[in-house]
Length: 126
Image 1 (cartoon, rainbow, N blue to C red):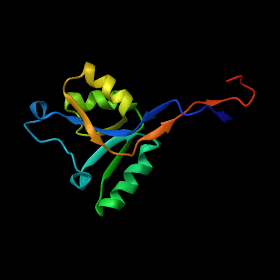
Image 2 (cartoon, rainbow, N blue to C red):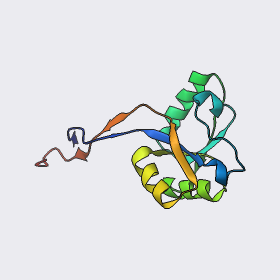
Image 3 (cartoon, rainbow, N blue to C red):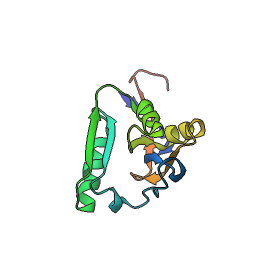
């Protein structure tokens, strides 16, 4: 495979409920406040490594639940509905979903900004 030039900037963000939809609980803004929190993500998501590294960085445990059934979008819906408290999603998708689900807050970064590109066949004219 080959890769295109970088076409987009993106990062991973924490998806949580806004205070008015979460018993007035203030959203997490500092990574240190993720200590002892449980974050649900899709099984084998690349976010796992970032959360494990973040756990080491803050010197405390972040509990990671890998879900076999639901994809990221469905986990975001579960946050909005109050079924789970946290998931992680890429910012582009999170902001789009936030327009449809006013319950969610997507303003806390989990990762640094990353360059995105497409993987293409080596013989592709792109």
